[in-house]
Length: 185
Image (cartoon, rainbow, N blue to C red; front, side, top):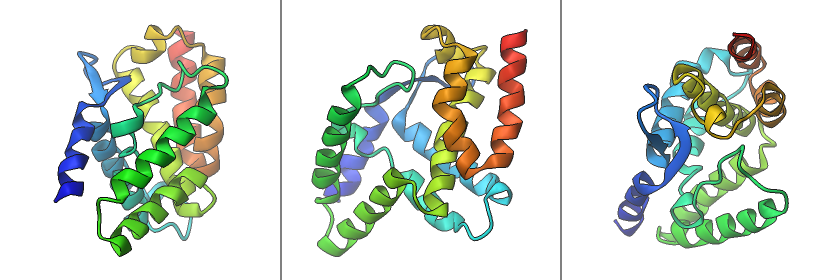
């Protein structure tokens, strides 16, 4: 129960990306739920051999570390902060997954580590979805956090394009056209 109650704190972590109607910031719990739904719905676009069940588990766990480490907006990250953020997230993973019985904590931590490393097909697809969901929200919200952070099309392509293209090439082709149309309009 300590783990489950702690996980509930994820709904208090505000993200830079706005919800679909643009009226407020999304929180990290909403983001994790939405990503799990993205995985379930977009499973036909996963590369062969990807286990959507494992992807959903990764996506439900991937941002729990933000309870301690906070969310770092992808377009607001400053050079040099990445190493400190990674250390803070590892410490948060130790604490949060440590609230579980040892065997379950090790299993959840292994899924989190796999997501972070993005070396397996499951983790690459999960990472791709993690990068694919925010631009869809930004497009729905008339630019959303792209406008808030004065983000250029080139910056978007550089920050999210490689991860999406690597883990879900069809989804990158699809969203890439919509990003181009947004900036052309």
